[in-house]
Length: 531
Ligand SMILES: Cc1cc2nc3c(=O)[nH]c(=O)nc-3n(C[C@H](O)[C@H](O)[C@H](O)COP(=O)(O)OP(=O)(O)OC[C@H]3O[C@@H](n4cnc5c(N)ncnc54)[C@H](O)[C@@H]3O)c2cc1C
Image (cartoon, rainbow, N blue to C red; front, top):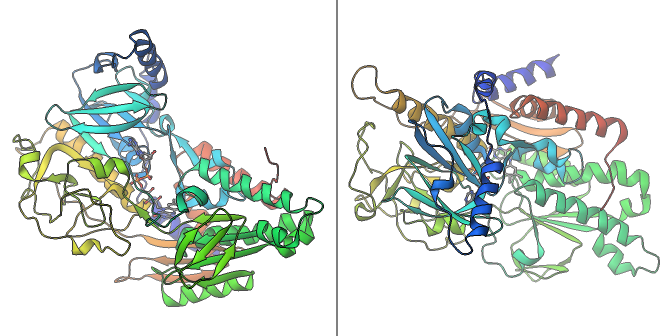
């Protein structure tokens, strides 16, 4: 009873940030002859093939209407929310992203051991915004490569190497971040990252492969131990959740199928500072106790080097491993670093309180955006594209008060920060920013009811933090550090965690898929098939 009450409180709290997609069916019904992004891409590819090296131009891109075109780069949390909320009767949409789906990252750790199937946590963008099927809109599987703010174009390259450009009236850069290696040798080559479903599946395959290989007759004892040793680097929520999922998998499916290997299996979690550093001390303690009791070795240390078989720590400790999962935080992508905008000290694109991208006045066009209220370019930021250092602090961003907003260009999510108020790289930040920008753009397109529209600045509301620790337990905090409403650990938190994320998943089919996977895992166990 208490559990369900708590769950509904949390999910109601979380739901407040997700809103409702009421207009989906009517939008969809209006499409007579849908020409989807894939079809247009095919035409585009055909054109490029016929003309040899000739670069396709925006003439081949979606039909032009009287509506303004919003170009969205990326298909993650920020982009998905923006696309969901933007009014497609006012805006034509072009989405550029190497992925045609949004990954529901809070549930990604569960796919590494098969508690959930990868497809259950990937939501196709057409499910989020059916208006993308219109002939005047499009989703292109490509990487954005450069932005020309004077010509208002984005240069893109598809996965198979076709270059093309798209024109924008407004541009939203939502290209996220990437796992940070801090320049530590061997990490990129040898570690597994956990940022998308492909990487999660690669972890699952490697885990199952190592378990199978460990059992080969004649296997040396030290090799047996190495193959069955998983090292997780990074004790944030993702690292802790993966460790918890692994202990569940080991104590259930592995113990049932291969008890000897299950007993030999070891999980080591390496953290340089604090486990779950952003949580309350009591919750951190609970998580540590729980993980240790479930057999996880918690090790304080800084990684010096990663070889194909060993994690070498700065204090000289060598940890032979069969699988190393790298989850130490995020940094900017080469694309965002290459853009000619101001950056914070950790390399994020500097934005102002209206999510407008900032740049030195010379690189921002002279045309201003009269629709926006408020002073322009008050944010402080350093320019340049230096790769950030390990311990760089965004609040140290030097003052460059002369920055100005780049007309018509916004950035949302992990890729950016307002140097006056830097926010953490979180899904809830990205999602709230996506919702904010959709509202601003809808108001701009509708025009002001009485004179010039006065947009309020973006304000972030931290809903809380959660992490599972295995064994039907989780830690949960509602509210932020200044206004903590509730801190809870144990089974109730786990129920709340599951309820909250189930209700927040982007579409009903995916909610059903996740509920189905959880039930299957509970009744029949996880699938250990390998291919
Ligand atoms: C395993 C995991 C668990 C997490 N759990 C939580 C959690 O429980 N709660 C929470 O608040 N946060 C969580 N996070 C963090 C959260 O997922 C991120 O903060 C969030 O995804 C940021 O959203 P975004 O839209 O800025 O970027 P992303 O969601 O990363 O999306 C970026 C998009 O840009 C695309 N892209 C990249 N480069 C280009 C390019 N050159 N051109 C075009 N497109 C490009 C990518 O393909 C992707 O679609 C988790 C993250 C991970 C990895």
